[in-house]
Length: 140
Image (cartoon, rainbow, N blue to C red; front, side):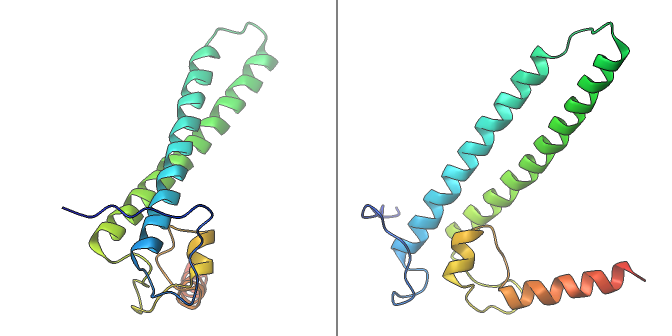
């Protein structure tokens, strides 16, 4: 059974600590869980809003506007769904002991990058290289 780690109030991961120690892992786990809960709450609100707006509007312009709004909401909801799956993958990496390390190079991902984007799977350098390669191949 895993020992629960408690974080002091205001804790932030620091470079002078051992990388991905129990406190850092707990910090990122909590951050990811809070983010996921927020996204799920927003998606529930979106679904409620879509259910309420599913009415028959006689005016063609109003109906077109409502359909545009609905399409935008659904696109946003789809992005949130994809983000939730990335959060779940990051939580699995925490459990597996793989969190915080680049999937391409195996090097540690900077704490600043992880704090800004805890779902990051690559170091900034590896991500930039990946994106440059994508741009080159997209133009082929």
